[in-house]
Length: 169
Figure 1 (cartoon, rainbow, N blue to C red):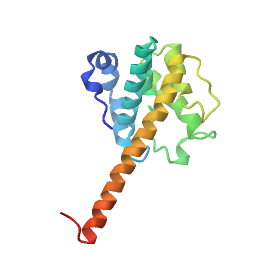
Figure 2 (cartoon, rainbow, N blue to C red):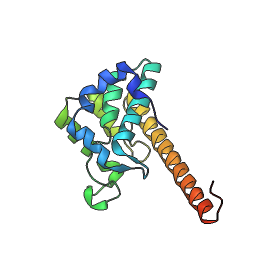
Figure 3 (cartoon, helix red, strand yellow):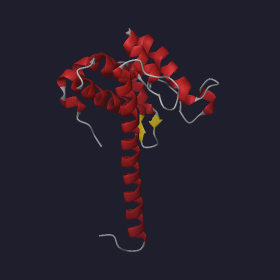
């Protein structure tokens, strides 16, 4: 499910400097949720969160920027060797925050958004409404990505099966 974030000039202006950053762009190299890449996922979470923050008259700028950086880590999330002793769900927000601070200044709210986006999988409770929005949009984006990926996989499997039994057009 493609989201037309590029058409929203206000959103683009908010995240433009981050989107042009090499480290952010390098997220495209990492598979995320089996069927997408980490950059596409981060943009999806960022744009969805931005829209909800605007709807609720919250800090849409902090929401969009921090959500874009919420998964700014550079390892395969399935690898157990790349994280500290507390597991990926706990460690990757802390790694993402450290990496984000290397490329931009962050407010306390933006730090909370990044650190707490795994609430539910961890005991890190969001302090701000913006943090809760990013937590929820992270889960919504992940579900949408998985569903779209499974639909593509199922269609490819059915197409292949039809070809092997002679029903292709």
